[in-house]
Length: 338
Image 1: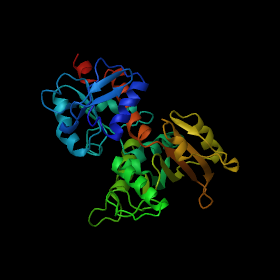
Image 2 (image 1 turned 45 degrees about the vertical axis):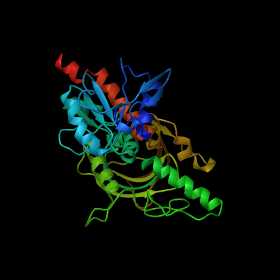
Image 3 (image 1 turned 45 degrees about the horizontal axis):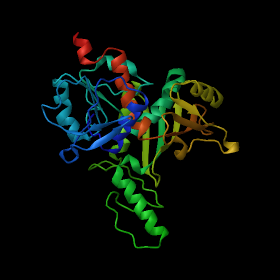
Image 4 (image 1 turned 135 degrees about the vertical axis):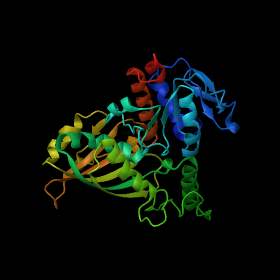
């Protein structure tokens, strides 16, 4: 378990404990400065170890949540040592030969892994869980999406920045200049998630959502336009998604379809103020979908409101689900070798 002391890493350990992940031994890895630290794991403590060539031997499975640099360096080393790596960073997602897997959507892709399996971007993850039943039933021609992403998607420093700015404003104190985001996030909305590469009007987050969605759904011909926005919410990403289907699909049929889909909960009675909320998604593994309605400008378009916990289903839970699938389907390298 790499990156065990970070927000996603600690959530992965919590999800593993909740789901009683079948492991003879669980070893948390982190940086040198965290080595020796004790981490709670249910009824016992785990001791953090520093990454080293000797320490990574004899593992069947490694769950990474330590960033692209660590994944690029240490992922292949774990594979060489005999483990299968499930990586949460963006490092391997679009690499040829590396399956990009959402447990409820394309578990069959695991069959082709060669030691590394990638976990998608959190915003992409929750969206495709809701889209998979639709593409199966009616096909998808085009998606126009806008995200409303919480600060925990950036990390603990962003959570602290939102907290500190909010407290300062409410107490009428002077604001410290922002260090995580380019502008104040408290009581504000930033139409930028991640960075702009030179010559590109779309952010790296928006590019990720467009490319990863096509790879997971297995359709290069889906037109996708994305706008990713950061909002002053601690946990839970929300998304407005306009779906143009290839075949007609009514709003009622869509509700029924999604109500029976794995990993999806439909909350859709707007007349009684029932629709997905970020605060209700926090701590849950389900993807919440509501505000399902016909787009009045196109007879084959529906609008959906999709909400999920970006730390759980958006990252940690799917990584653990993928690890479970690798084990159950005998796709760990030791099993394959045997």
